[in-house]
Image (cartoon, rainbow, N blue to C red; front, top):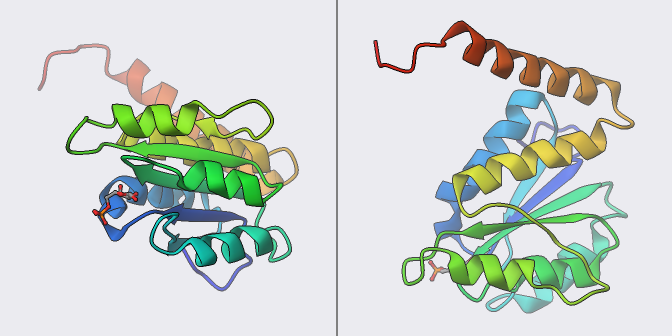
Length: 167
Ligand code: RP5
């Protein structure tokens, strides 16, 4: 969502082919009314852009980065190396290894440079957005309210539909 408001979350991904997964992070933040920006930034193909984007992210007003990548997924780790902001990593489901390569590449950071690693695929992208919102909720009242509403509605949907059989 690039609404003209100051983006608080930067969502980067290694390739346009990651969009189908990463759009769930964007859509979740949009539902919560959290301003974000989205860019393709590749650790392998555009390393200078990656350095520039991450080095400037905090000064531009971003507060959290979400980085999605697949395969030899260096993007979240390299992003974390270049910014003091919290970085949430989303392993994109790769074709060859179903995202296990992405997951291990992102999760196995050596001590000292953390990446908060989420689940492979859509669930990870959605939860990265929810986690980013939870971080922002500590000091943005409107985000806290939106997140509380989201959780309450989710709970209510389950309680209102106790019968697991399809209608
Ligand atoms: C990674 O390589 C990207 O994050 C993507 O998941 C994967 C494949 O990229 P494409 O070859 O589809 O551009 O860097």
